[in-house]
Every structure is written in structure tokens, then in C-alpha cells.
Image 1 (cartoon, rainbow, N blue to C red):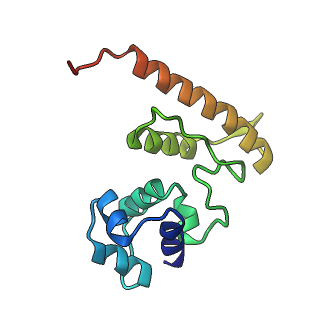
Image 2 (cartoon, rainbow, N blue to C red):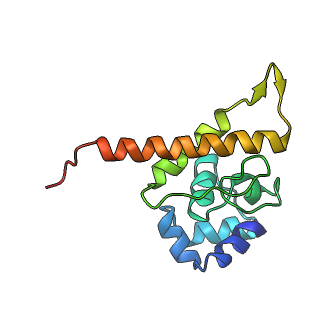
Length: 138
């Protein structure tokens, strides 16, 4: 997976650092990069999250390395308060959306605009949810 290696280097991670971030061994990352082995879906998703890119980019199905690409749109701005789980939730949220109007699928540009609005609403809701939960620490 050349793109994995390229993205890892672009993020200034060593194989050891990336392995630690995705709870794997350095040899596992090395094997992925050389093509000796292939990550399973969960690992691929974790790698994409840590490398702030998409699974499609890592697999060569997209030329845009930007994270959370909404149908060719600009990459999402992930808020500071967002946890790794929040980012996964957001990706799941985006992937579940079948964007149509009056029964007709939207163009990529139209979908990107709609998903951009939905993105803002998603992060606003997450922020309000975090603010309204009482802290269990203390």
C-alpha cells in the first residue's frame, strides 16, 4: 500500500509511531506498506482516522487524501473537542446518508453542499451533547 506509506510520511509518523496509534506492531505496518499483508476493514478504518484521510484514498479509489471528503467536497474541519470515536461516528453518519431530492439522486456537487450543512449540524449537536453531560471526573 504505497499510499499508506506516503500518508504516514506526510503526517511525519514513523512506522513505530503509527503502529502504536492503531494498536499494532511495527512489523504489521511494514507488512501493509510492502504489500506482504493487507489490513482488515477495522484496521483500515483506524489507519485512515489516524492518518486523517479516507479508506478510499488508502485503497486507491480516490485521488483526494483529505479526510472526510464529502463526495468531492472540501475536507471537514474536525473540532478540537472531537474524540476519535466522534470522528468515526461522523464518518458512519456521512456514509449512511442517501442524498436525494424528490426521489432523484443529487449530483456530487449538490450532495457535497447538503453534506456540508449536515456536517455543521452534526458537530453542533455533538458539542451541545458534550456540554450538557455532567462530568464524571472530580
